[in-house]
Amino acid sequence: MKVLLAAFLALGLGAQSPATQAPAAASVPAWVALHPEYHASANCIFCKIVAGVAPSRKVYEDDRVVAFWDIAPRAPIHILVIPKQHIRSLDELEELPVETRAALLDACFKVAKQFGLVEHGFRVIANTGSDANQTVPHLHFHVVGGEKLLEDPITKPAAAK
Ligand code: AMP
Ligand code: ZN
Picture 1: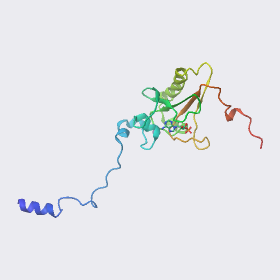
Picture 2 (picture 1 turned 135 degrees about the horizontal axis):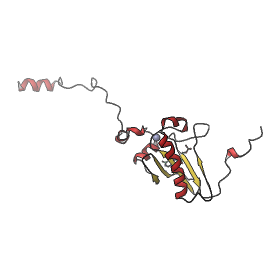
Picture 3 (picture 1 turned 30 degrees about the horizontal axis):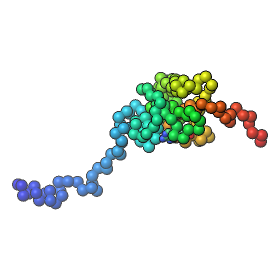
Picture 4 (picture 1 turned 90 degrees about the horizontal axis):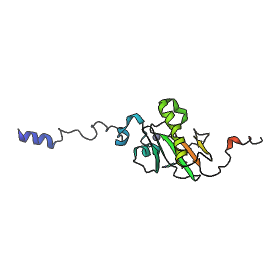
């Protein structure tokens, strides 16, 4: 019996060849599976920051949002406030629970206060989509201040045609 079994195995009859094996399930990184409620995108740099698998200089975090320094600050204070749940931008806001929407606005204010911006003013920007030149497709609010900011384009009169 043992001899028969050995021959069976030696012929490879007891195992599937690679060609007949079921294709491996698309591998989902462990950090994505850990919080399914975040709908994390494995290729999203901000989802990686939320999960702590990409570096960031976090300045605020609660159960719904994270705030961290922009990697290329354009003002003395330049913080990004993001939801832990991945949505690409404000155009998908309806997918966020209202509590998270409130938490985002609240975090913008908390960050402004934390960095002493409330007295002299600050700006909150959410570039949304291609016309607004959004570059990272995970909703984020820029909180910028700490100096007299340049006039923003929408407060200037439209250019003469
Ligand atoms: P936006 O152009 O409005 O989509 O802004 C994206 C912002 O994300 C830019 O200001 C970038 O400097 C910033 N950014 C991109 N990658 C990172 C990162 N890994 N950590 C922090 N900020 C980042
Ligand atoms: Zn994301």
